[in-house]
Image 1 (cartoon, rainbow, N blue to C red):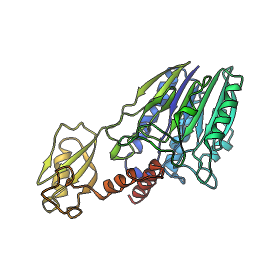
Image 2: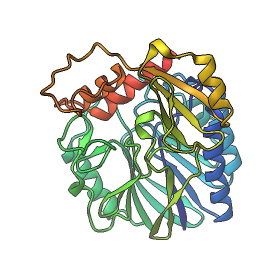
Image 3: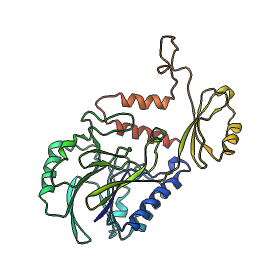
Image 4: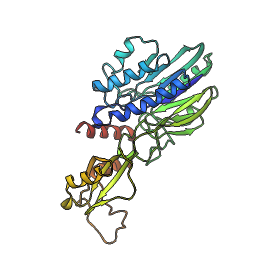
Length: 348
């Protein structure tokens, strides 16, 4: 059998004019699945960026499911699309489509797909609920004993040792588990969402990563999904729009050629000499336009001659919030960052 492992779509109109970027990435997944005659597409959480998604995002995902037919689309609940009431995917699940299955509870299930038995341990991100390491180990034992052709763990949480771009998950904070509880004989793959950087953590534990760069802190991360052909796994990169940071310091400071159609974040270091109309015209002549403007505050640090250049480097207030989250202890850092980004984007 052939499977696709993807996650973290974060579909939302809140990203400005970027809905077309998500259309592009989802279309690549659909085309690959059709060409390869895949049997199943696993979506490991965070289909939507908000628990009350806009109609355009709903329609985009519904079309994704419809276009993939008859390939099965199996989705679990994530952090962003979690709801204490009706989950935004429940209306779609209630239609009982023959190629769509949605899980929002911690459970084991056995599916018959194209003549093969597939055992699943599903661990969606459950806020206000506690799933212990011991409970997971009990369920894994049940899964291993289940008579089937394939056994998968599908989850949306953090694994100790996973890399989230700027830091390594180290401590068992909220909804964070050690990798060793999943490394059991008989489990084919542990397929996860929540951390946006694609990676193999250890053994057969994988994060597919997001299908798009959700914020500027992710611009250097590759985007794609995993393809499983029987029990062989490979990473398939997605072609996404490039993103660049451009500094304005008494003029544009361009360090490299910018591809047409790219997204540009303009960082203003000398606001007194910044004329947006002039800068936009200059970038437009290069085939790109400004997606975001950031003013670096100049009064956050007192300059001390004894400080290194690294320390006195000016930072945006958003950078400082993210840095504070990463330096915190006893919290789910990814969840805090996700919530912070959701608040910022809701103000767009």
